[in-house]
Image (cartoon, rainbow, N blue to C red; front, side, top):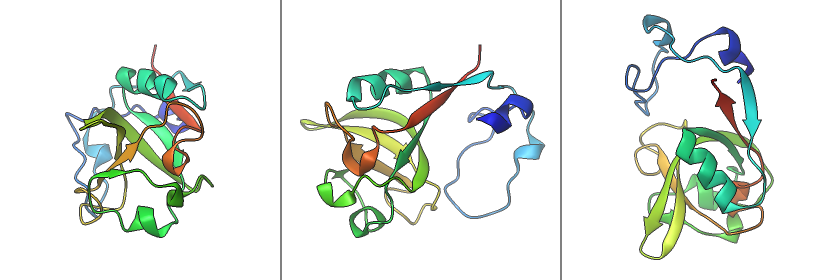
Length: 144
């Protein structure tokens, strides 16, 4: 977020996420959004994180070094085996439900061959650290 204070970011409509390896083309797009500061999301509740996601993409930290996370191929990840020792930053871009299971839609940086074309659905928990620790440390830019 500190970077975006002095380097305006392109909108996703202008520079779409491709979920594949390649050269960064950000310099080809005019930056339109600058962060004035970071807003921390209250830790430990799905309601706080969902409210932040409704405002826009949120940087979240998770544990990604586990077999259950790295081997994810689809569905909603809802496993205590994922752990909560944070080691990877990703972007929460939405939330929804699959049947009765609520989840966060998360964009990873590992390319389209991982997960669901580069995305993962991580189950929400009303309270606590969250599946893969997703409800522990989250921030989003204040662009006002």
